[in-house]
Amino acid sequence: MDLPAFGLTGPFPDRDYSIDNYLVFMEDFLLSRGIKHCILAGNSLGGQIAWEFTLKKPEMVEKLILIDAAGYPLQSSSVPIGFKIARMPFINKILTFITPRFMVKSSVENVYADKSKVSKELIDRYFDLTLRAGNRQALVDRMKAVYDTSRVMPIKKIQQPTLVLWGEQDLLIPTGSAYRFHEDLPNDTLVILKNVGHIPMEESPTKSLNAVLSFIQK
Image (tube, rainbow, N blue to C red; front, side):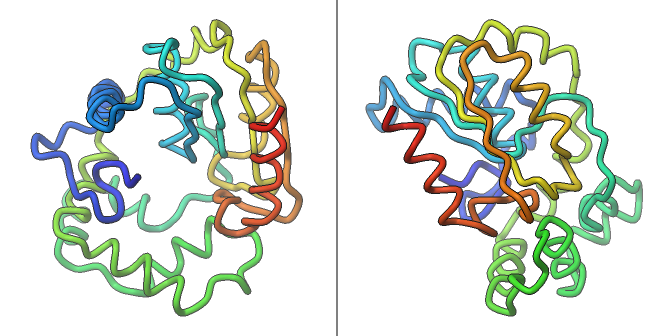
């Protein structure tokens, strides 16, 4: 499932990209599909939405998988250029109707540890999805959303078995956050993948899948 503002789903009509709005969307989506219990997984922002949803609706989540998940105060050593521009007042308006392909290429390479895996086909896919109607404005709107880092305080209350899966070379959300999840979650499994960046499920799908299968089959 693509979250609103990502991929093929398109933007929120009300342009509200607060975490709370995403949580409402998640509940509505699951209930519309008749899903009352699930294993919930998310990467980056999706990971944050996953653990916050687990706190909000614990009865709906059987297990939790956090992949380079957001939530703790960021200590990024490198940020994709697309994110940087989207945060710049006035300049970000240009981004909503002019998006150079090289910017998308640079942003994808930024979140991969092994740049040789960033193929032309991969860049084309990201570029095409970026150009999906409404996605560029959605990126700018999301970058404006204010996040209260105190929201991480209740993480210790999560009782669901949790897999914390992380790329060792993640420069956007470094492994410091992985170890904080590991410390705060009372029932978790921590897996750090070597030579992998921010999106392990793409860059190292086999190792990521092995870790997930091992976790959910326990």
